[in-house]
Amino acid sequence: MATPLVELRNVTKRYVGVTAIADLSLELHAGQVFCLLGENGAGKSTVIKILTGVETPTRGEVLIDGAPVNFASPREARERGIATVYQEVGTLPLMSVARNFVLAAEPQRGRGLFRRLDLEEASRIALKSLRELGISRVDDGEQLVGTLSGGERQALAIGRAVHFGARVLVLDEPTAALGVRESATVLKLIDKVRERGVAVLFITHNAYHAYASGDRFMVLRRGCELASFAKAERTIGEVIELMAGGAELKSLLAKGELAVGPG
Amino acid sequence: MSVNPHPSDAAGAAAASQIDDEATRRPARSRLGRLLIRPEAGGVVSAILVFAFFAVAAGQNGFLSPLGTANWLDTASDLGIIALPIGMLMIGGEFDLSVGSIVGASSMIVAICAGYYSLNPWIGVVLAFLVAGLIGLANGLIVVRTKLPSFIVTLATMLMVTGGALGVSIALTGSSSISAMTAGSAKTAFASDFHQFHISIVHWLVLTAIASYVMQKTAFGNWVYATGGDAQAARLAGVPVTRVKIVLYVCTALAAALSATNETLTFQNGNITLGSQYVFTGIAGAVIGGVLLTGGYGSPVGTVFGSLTYGIVSLGVFFLGWNADLANFFIGLLLLLAVLANHRLRQLAMGRA
Figure 1 (cartoon, rainbow over the protein chains, first blue to last red):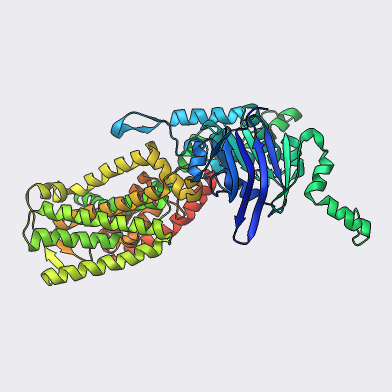
Figure 2 (figure 1 turned 45 degrees about the vertical axis):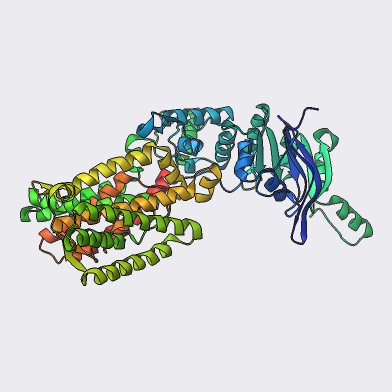
């Protein structure tokens, strides 16, 4: 198999008194969606923090294109092409789509004192990027971001990251706050991004959303790998069981200590 | 909004209702609608309304005469020079309560140098701008380093600047009010007039043009809007949020020094209490001009109309022969209406009409 874009190799992260993740290894490949599943506190956030340079591992290595790296800051990770789209922040409701899209990487023209924003270019690349992600309802770069739906805002954030050179996209619970239709929009976005050869790390606790778009899966529990498999290896039912601690439930049921009915 | 062209055609009705669906989710797209959701709309409307009122009520008393016009434009420009950067700072998500004290301190510096010590007035002017710039820098650094609310930080610096300036001027001159005659190029630059129209009006218009250009047409302007909209999101996107805030504080302080220099050399008197009203009228001018208290929205042109409103009301009340305190009553009322209107305008802009 090709060299992974990003790899965690036997990574352990310990905070004072707590082991957040223990001896974890995973590979993110170009054009592949890797789903990281698990309950709250399973260690998903810690994996994101290590990948994006917010935290450094206690033990183990982070490799980019096969070479070990030591991120000193989130900016360094960003410069190496690892972009994060957060569930709660990222877009500015009172700014226009175009201005928001190019924020902090504004296209400019003119020179010296007359160096100014190229708003037409900003509008053009923003709308083009949104169209490529399948968002056709937004056709005016001056439209305020606050008028977009949740899914369209995710598209804006994802399109922005990809346009400005992200090779690895970390999506932290992108569907958690969205309704059914908006979630479908986001899952379609993930598909489009994969088609463009970006490696996606999709963090979620929704097994259906993961199963609908993922290529590889890892279930975390209390900082350890509980299972790791390709899509063809498990059914959706098995994935849900793994996530919900189905084995434990079953053993309790077998002992007759707990009764779980359909109602 | 839309009229169904074929009421009998079921498919047409369905299509029309779909369009209606879309329309309710989108902001007003008509030209008038677009104009009305611009941030400065409220300021323009309030300036026109108060002008119309006082033109009718006080037109016979000299409000519309060239002198009257020069007077309210002058008052508007003195405030406008300060409300302009205050508005930008508020768009960037911060307050500056120390701006009035910087006006007072700068006024004393100019007057002590040019009046008490009879130095070249430019020495006082340069020193005033230098000191003001340093105070602005201190404001900015303290706000971004401590992450304390700027309200409390600049309240503290306001007291320190006023107290410090008073202490120094008493120690040097024994007074808190110094006369300062001026002549030559400094008088031309800061205290000249043309048919009663004061040079500060020119300063105001030039600064507004520069501020508008920066806010609408440059990357820095984009960063200011983003910083005030959501500082965390801006930072994650790569905007140098702390630098943006520090620059805005320095600009505000420098504008205060300019306004102080204009007034001190025009009235030929430096006073520690000069500009103390700007603490509140500056914010009022910006908010009447459409700047959101919560940041992220507004425009320099809006603060021009907010300041114009203030100038028109102040002088209008004077020309009517009413008690001058009534001017503040009207400004307060307009401020209240402006806050409510801004909230509503923002909802319209977001398409939640």
